Image (cartoon, rainbow, N blue to C red):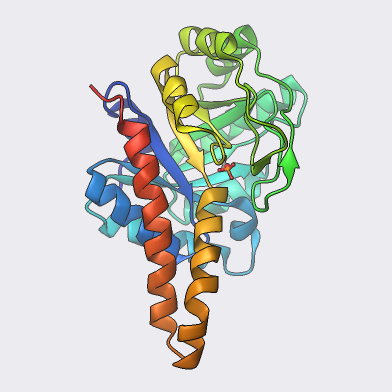
Length: 280
Ligand code: 13P
């Protein structure tokens, strides 16, 4: 069932975080929703902005919204990382429950202006907004080894949230999208200050490749939403390679799709266990 972004975050069990998983197709969406149903937890389906910008982007957005609405798990579809107000408007029209207005590459005042505009448009559609302050390095759709970008300043983050009225803030504390060039190291004091000083839930992007112990420590400090993509793509592609010979031999497409869905659901189940392991 569809649940507003803010409700999903606010109603999460104390000591847990909401998982947000990128879905490039229906196989992935079905896998994520199935895992959330069996974990009896809410979930967010992320729509990558490059997928949404493709020719069939509106169709994919609509399909994710329908899949989320039909699920027994409380779910919300979110357009991930977009600095394009036109795309944000189109995604809202397609029925997404949240957008990430990403002005992290802009100067502070322009980031504020972008996010304020997005908050106004989203409010008119009954949707929520996430923003980013500091800069999370790496690519969102393919895995290149990256080192951390500019870290989020706690005082600036508190002011940014107050100025924009955003529902959730993505922070940079040593996390990167895709692959980590070196072992991930988080700035725990900074995360503690951010969680203590910022009035809305914080999100952790770039969780693929981060050890579970670091994830649970982030949640214990107050992280409320965790984005996962790369590990899902890896599982999907490994399952595709394994299932392909049998699928090709029998021109058996449904067997290939089942293998992909099962593989992704397995990863999501494990992630959701970690994200809820500290729940009261
Ligand atoms: P990973 O690909 O590193 O899991 O990051 C996903 C993400 O943060 C999407 O916004």
